[in-house]
Image 1 (cartoon, rainbow, N blue to C red):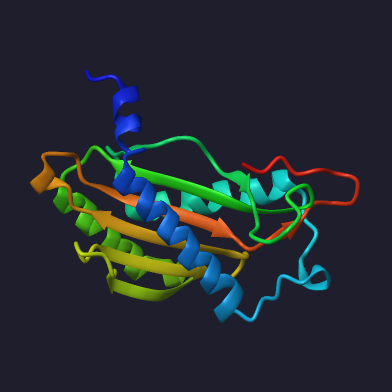
Image 2 (tube, helix red, strand yellow):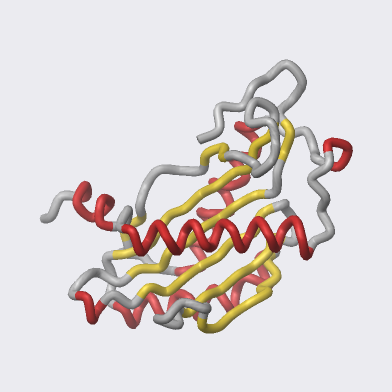
Length: 189
């Protein structure tokens, strides 16, 4: 049995990180631009970091369960506080949770993303985009907003078969910006 460490390192590859970064930027724009949410101090909700991280963990678990990939592996780590662009990093944060599901056949990954498209609306998600992204590879992309929490997710089906690498579903879950409770500092990464 192969060690899990090399697989995790593989998913930190530059292509995976570029997709996660692009997805996060798109989601931030979607959440702050399209939703009408303004990041002014008066409109930024105050929220304890650990509670926001727990929401991120639960939403990621819900997404993985909807995929129904019983034999898939997932990457680590869990949700963490990240910086809000243009905000005081000691007071403002957003939750980020990039992860991937891998270790199963490409056909299973295709079926999983189809299940997500079908099942997410029934589980409190609004699918706002489904189709090829703007990359040269035209990677299948699903973008959805939680109707219950201030989170969005970008999901990409990465076909790596031609590169002799393991294909995967890359997930980038992000929250809106929050302000830490008065007297508490954020340790955003």
